[in-house]
Image 1 (cartoon, rainbow, N blue to C red):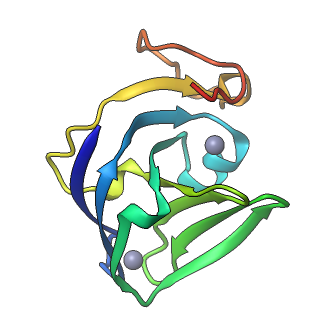
Image 2 (image 1 turned 180 degrees about the vertical axis):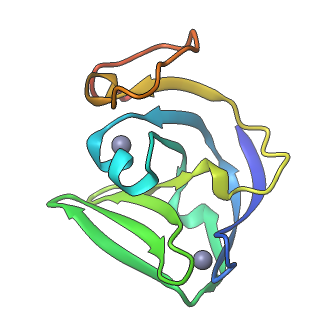
Length: 133
Ligand SMILES: [Zn+2]
Ligand SMILES: [Zn+2]
């Protein structure tokens, strides 16, 4: 859905606006999201060119695998972005967006690797690993 949103981390050292076609939110239960968010990651996704930074003084990137990196704030510790090589899209942790976001959660991915201290209680589609849909 084509929308414009404002977003920032907890300390506002990273602040940006989006304007474009947002994918709805995907809850990712992979091990990497667990280790960086403390629980699953909830990500929207948008084309790189539709993100405009107002501040990125404290934005740093962590190379989390051979083909992906994660953007975080080195002041407040927020986990903000997920980005794969060879992609024009960037995933944005949905909690960064100011309300109302108009976004909806649409699915659960990597459910095979979720932790055991919570249950997935929604009725949304579940995928064992990644889903392109
Ligand atoms: Zn911050
Ligand atoms: Zn994940």
